[in-house]
Structure formats: structure tokens, C-alpha cells
Image 1: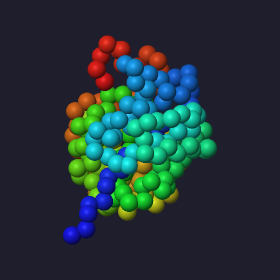
Image 2: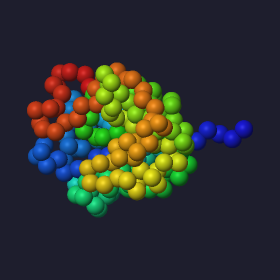
Image 3: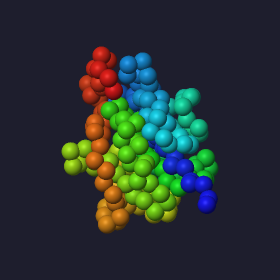
Image 4: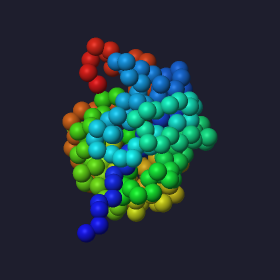
Length: 192
């Protein structure tokens, strides 16, 4: 019996944060930068290796196994997703769980729930009160198709929409809300 291929994690953290006023990846909430939190949540959710895609800012991310610097980050999130999926550190992974750095309410439990349904042929998305959100798991068999349909600010959404019969939805606790402006940040006294 061959060993089970790992489920990797990808943090998309390349954006310039135009509406926010600067790159959100390096914004600290409760003493932890959003990019570090996202990488930690993937790791605590059982993902390995963890790849972080940066662009507007280049910084060290201790919890990452690999950091990809996306020179095309200004063209949209799709370029970061494609860069992450192409990272050599993912060579042995059966699938990748994708999260966004600017979603501080994502939990390791949501990552585990989505990753548990994963494999090379899987397409899995978390749902929150019936609405799809992150994390999203993309099985390796779909990576080329995801890359072909990704464009601008649309990452895997177009591919998932083109293959609805294959997408497994996993209800999760919490929220997939993202941070667009400083006013969207969690209260420093709250737990994220």
C-alpha cells in the first residue's frame, strides 16, 4: 500500500490592499500578522507543505515551507493562485487547500473539514450559512483546468462554476468574511 499524498496549503497574500490603504498581509491583529495567521491556520488544519504567495510586499513568513514572490500580483488574484499551484514544493501533494490572508475568521477546524474530503480528483468548498467561501480544496487533477480559467480577480471560482456536479460543499462554523478596509478588522480584544 502506497503512502497517502499530503494535502498542501496555499495562502494568497500578494495584493496591494488598494481599498485598505496598503498590503493587508502584514497588518497585525492581536499581535499576529494576517499572513502569519493564515499560514498557521493551514498548518494547524493539517496542511503540509504550506506555501505563501506574496507580491506587493516581500516578507519572511516563518510558518511557510515556501514563499513565492508573484511579480504579476497587480494583474489580479488569479496570477497568485496560478503561481501557488506551480510551486515545486507542492510536487508530492494530492491537493491544495487555498485560503486568503485577509480572512482572519477562518479556523483550523474549517481547514480540517475541507481537507478531510480531499484527494487528487476532489473539488471542495467550505460553506457558511449556505454561502460558499474559503477554504477551497483543489485536487491535483484540476490544477491545469483551474489555471486555464483563472483570470483577473477570479481564481478558482470560474472552474468550480464550470464543474458544479463535482464540487462538494462542507458546512463550516465561523465566517469567510474578508477585510477590505481598516474598519473591517476584528476588535483587538476579540478572538479570531
